[in-house]
Length: 69
Image (cartoon, helix red, strand yellow):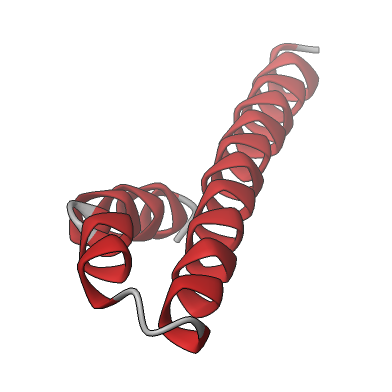
């Protein structure tokens, strides 16, 4: 009985982590799409602004994924 609760809790945490990773991924995709548009229009400063801080978000995503293993 206790093992089932533990397993259910682990699965719930795993699902929540994956949900968060998917949210971060979607945000990154939207940002990179905007950067691609800026680059296609030779707006290099806008593209630079679009990627500012992106490493932190990628690192956060990576950290969440590492929690699963």
